[in-house]
Length: 535
Image (tube, rainbow, N blue to C red):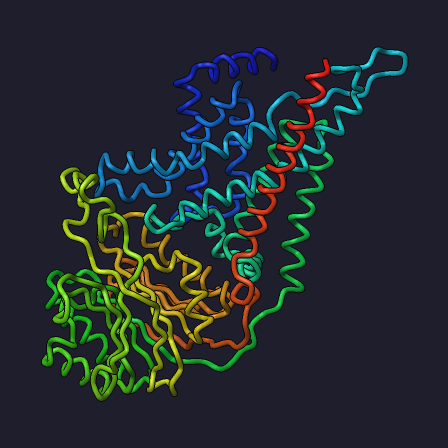
């Protein structure tokens, strides 16, 4: 056993080997997301990375292990971007991975070092510096372990918060989102959003790492695991739930890969006509379902209006097109009723970096030469919109476009503005054979559960999915091999979830914990200076 440990220590002593190990350890959590969806792995997925970082010989090495692990995580979660961005995805991963460098230092500070010694036997000499007893060292270690259970998850959450900024790529791959199909986790999300779920997952990983690395301080680790289990149990049995408020019959039209825009439109029209007589109140098409804006093309508007009359439902289409009133192209959700366009429209606000625009194009524009980055920038919308659907009795829906479903604040904003249904229009046809469609579709469950509002996720080519107000899946999912129109009886709900009401309190709590810990550490450092000076 000792010989095996010695070989492992020598292997990790190599900077290159240790770097590879850090990157691989950081990539493990990617398996918790779709398509693998090994959600249960999330509760131990960070343990190898934590153990590696805590063993770093210096804080500089811990920061590097955090950076390389973060790089591995970003690469693994976004590996489906490789065919489009090629070598540039590595540049992006290295830039975003640097966000985990401070987290590595935090892990090393709280979990690093040797385990506490056993209490000195009676008659033996005191252990530790300045005559400190073994029991005293155990108390110090226990305090550090208890602090780690709060501060390591808080530090992780700050990384997730910073990288959630839209100009850094947005909140794709938040650790809490891996639990999209776990009802107790969705209940937690209704209380504190996906952020609270991430906190709990990292806390469990930290406790497990402590049990492995510090057996002498098992008490705070076991207590931490019990607290996490108790939090999930209390949320499941005692957290408020939405009140049922009837149903709404909606339909999703997914034309599939049909070649040219005209062929896609023809297929969408045929699928929509098949819904006539089925008492559907709202029909949703996917992102970029049209390449002309009905507002600027009367003949197209007339065709869509005829579809609305024939089906008795309003159509929510999506136009990826130029505007007559200003230059440039935007992606807009447009509502079409039996009397024509209603005037309600929403232009996508948060664009996909490098897919729909290139940040700092004058510096990073070379990305278009090494991959399939955007050759021109899309226009941004100026504000979110809630649309009343006349054919559904004036029920109000809140549209989102593409990866805007990854942003918790956007769905919350729409809910607070009165949206009864959240509707996402997406197109992931570029990434059909990857994990991207399943990852994207799963986000709807989190947004629905957070806000107690059903979510409709409609795509051009799959995966289209519908979720109820608790995040539960409704009806069939339309996979990437389907070209179909599907009807759903969507359960509506009343009430305001704790997350919608109170917002990102879990994030603010994590910030507060880190600030208090930093202040405490600073005061301790200042108090030690006079003592050292007297020596």
